[in-house]
Length: 625
Image (cartoon, rainbow, N blue to C red; front, side, top):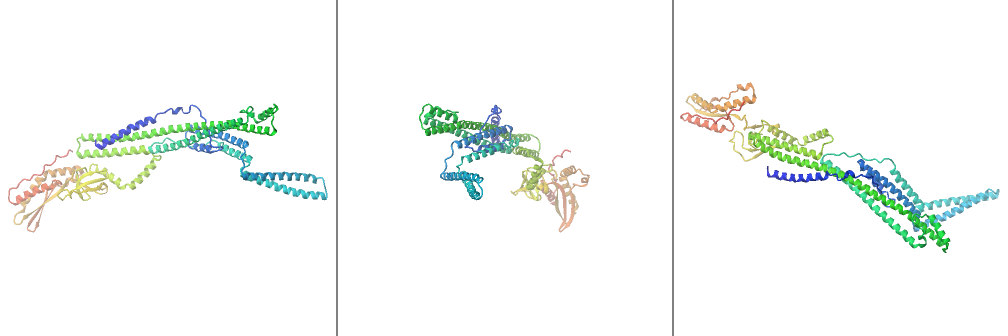
C-alpha cells in the first residue's frame, strides 16, 4: 500500500470512529417518548389587547406537519383565544373605571358637544310645547303657531347635526369612552371569529427522505421551526412576567389607597362589591361618624374605585397563568422538533458512515487485489490490464454509491436518467468516445504498456495508457532504425473507435522484407540466384512457418492456405548487370539483424569465398492450438 493510501486510510478511520460516536449519541431516545405524559395547557399574551400572539400561533400552525405537533398547535390557539377574552374584558373594565384624560382639544370639543346637546334639549322641549298649543287654537293664532313650530323644528334639526358632528369629532380625539368600548368589542368579535372559522388547516406530513442533500434541507427546515418556537416561547414568558408585574403594582396601589383612607380599610376587602361598600359607608355614618355629605360621597367614590381595581387582579392572574402555560406548550413543541432534528442528524451520520466505509473498502480492496494479481502467473500485460480495469471499476462503483448516498434516489428515475444521459452525451462526447476507446484497447486486440505501436502515423513505445489518453515515446516509423526521438506523444483514445492503429509487439507482427543485389555482367546469374535463394530460405524457414501458423489460426479461412510464405526471387536487367531481388518473411523487430547477416553472406559469395551458412534468430515455440 502506498504512503498516500495509508494516510487516506488513517484519516478515514479517525472520521469513522467520530461518526460512529455521533450515530450512537443521536440514536438515543433521551425519554422523548414520554414527552406527552399529560396534556399541557398554554396561554397567549402580549401587550393590552395585542393580537400578535394569535397571529404567531396561526403562523406556527402552518409548520405543524405531524399529529403530535398539530395537537400542541390547537392547544396553543385555544389558550391564545382565552387570554384574548380576558384581555378584552380587562380593557373594557379599565376604560370604564378609568376614563382617559381629555386633551385640550378634546375638552373644547366636549364643551361644544354639551352646548349643542343643551340647545337640542331646549329646542326639543319648545317643539313639543308648540305642537301641543297648536292643537288647541284655530284661525290666525294657529297660523302664527305653525310659523313658530316650523322655525323651532328647523333649529332642532340644526342642533341634531351639530350634536352628530361634535360626537364624531370627540370620537376622533379619543375622548368618548363608550365609543372606545364599542371598538374593543368589534376587535374581540373579529379575533374570536378568526379562531372559530372552523378546523385549522395543517400541512401534509413531510416524508423522511434519503440522501445527505435532502436530509440537510429537512434539518434546516426544522431548525427554522425551532427558532420560531423559541421566539414564541420567549414572547409568552416575557408577557407572563409583565402581567405579574402589573398585578403586583396594582395590588400595591390598592393597599396604598386603603392606607390613605383608614375609614375604608375595615370595609374594603377583596371580593366586596360597590353596593356593599356603599351600605357600609352609610352604616358608618349612622354609627356616629360626623362628616359632611361631600366627604361621604368622596369616600364612596374611593371605595368604588378600589373595588373596581380589585376585580382586575384575578384577571391579571389568569392571564399570567395562560402565558406561563403557553410557554410550556411551545417548550414541549420545541422538544418534539428537537427529537426530529436528532433523528435527521442520526440518518445523516449513518449516510456519512456508509460513505467512509465505501472509501475504506475501496482503498483496501484495491491494495489487496493488486497483491493478489501480483502473485498470479499471468503475462505482465494481462496483469496490468486486469489491475487497471479492476481499479477503475472499483473507483467508478464507489463514486456511484457515494453519489447515491449524497443525492438519494431520484423521484422520477427514468426521466432523470434520460435527461442526464442526453446532457452528458452532448457535453462529454469526446470523453465518452475516449473512454469507450480505452475499453477497446483493453480487449484482446488492444495495446499494453511497453508495446511498440503506430498510431496516426506516429510510431513509438507505449509508456502510459489511461482511461482517456494514450502516451507514446516516439521512435520513428517502422522503416527507420527504431531509435527513440525523446518526444512524448499523447493521443485521445478515440483513435481506437474513429481511426486505426498498428501493434508490432503482438502476434501478427510479421512483414515482408526485400534484398536487392546487382550481379556483374558477363557471368551466369542463375547459380548465384540459386545460392542466394537457398541462403534466404534457410535463414527464414522458421519465421515463415510461424507466420503461416499464426495467420491460419487468426483467420480460420481456407483461402489463406493458397498464400505462400516461401521466399520469392525476381531478376531484371539494369545498367551494368542484372538486379536480383529476394522477398522474404521476417519479424518487424528482427528484420535489421537478419538483413545484415544476409548481406554479409552475399558479399562473401560475390567475393568468391566459400558460402557461409546464415542462421536466423531462434524462433519462439509454436502456440498451443
